[in-house]
Amino acid sequence: MIASKARLRSSRRLERIAGFRLPDRAFHGVVLDTLTSRLDFDRLDPTTREQLLEFVADFLRCDCKKSPQCGCPERRFAATVLELREAGLDHRQISAHLADIYGIELFPADILSYLEDSVHVLEAIEKVAALQDRTAVAAGARTHIAALER
Image (cartoon, helix red, strand yellow):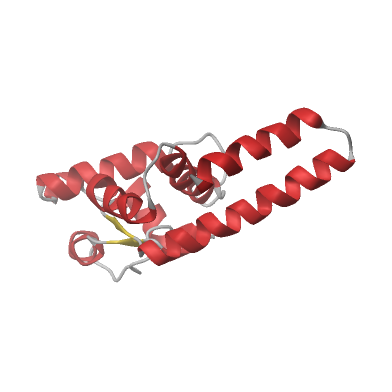
């Protein structure tokens, strides 16, 4: 999944504040736990603080019992990448947007690969839906494919 390739720019700064070593993967369990429970955001510089607060607000808010280890953050991130593409951003612009808003580094090539894989999954959904006479699902898949491919 695309979330496994996302890296936090500020991981070294977070390590110094948290007082222990953190992986640089944005959606690693230790990082998510640290962001939701153990981090003093007031010790961060304003830019990093804003980016991490956006990250927490957009990806780590859910009511699951196992939050943030429930999988919701990764699914929300993946959906965000798709939404940005459907809004008209290309893979380079999506990478720049994620870096600016959330402090997440993600290679444009990884985004492009994820988008291509998503189109293939949607094509499969469309075909299965057509076989089962679920025209609304097939039409929805076609709509998303068209938005991702433009």
